[in-house]
Image (tube, rainbow, N blue to C red; front, top):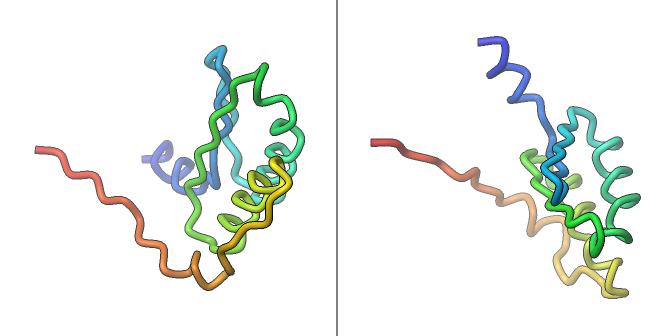
Length: 91
C-alpha cells in the first residue's frame, strides 16, 4: 500500500539506455533534470515519462523538447488542460 502511495506522488521518470531510472516527486527537480540531460540524449539515450496531470509541468516538458531543436511549442497551456489519464484494463 505504501508503494502505491509513493508511486502516486511521482511526477515523472527519466530512464537511460543503460537501464538507470530516476523517479521524481518534485516537478522543479524533474524539469531541471530534463533540461540538463536533453543536450546529451544522443549518448545517454534518455526516455522521459511524465506522469503528472499538471498542465504547466506537461507543457514545460514539451517546451524543453521543442527548445532542443530550436522550435517553439505550437500548443498553448489550455491544450494541456484537457488531459485524460490512460486507463489500463486487465482481464
